[in-house]
Image (cartoon, rainbow, N blue to C red):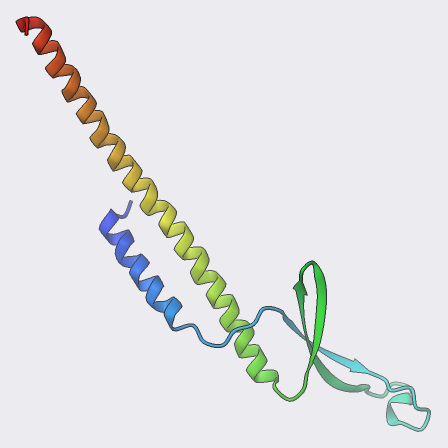
Length: 132
């Protein structure tokens, strides 16, 4: 089990990584291929390719799915989604690390208070025996 100092050092490293987080956005990027419906278009021919891909970003906003068409910024959007996922991972690690730190501090605090309680009982017992 890592020491409290090791956990706190790791927490500082995670905080420094969080400060360096760049542009981010949640969602999923989807490439769609569609047929336009014009009889004279190449996509209307049997076994021909549809138009596309047409890229869109979907994400949940207040419980509803929102879709935004992404023009030529596909690579930029992929990088932003990757950064969002990295951010979420860092936050999750930071939370778990803080739980461990808090648990260790509580355990140390409990051990200290137990030794204080035991010391108080011993002094009280000595006083009773000596008649003070």
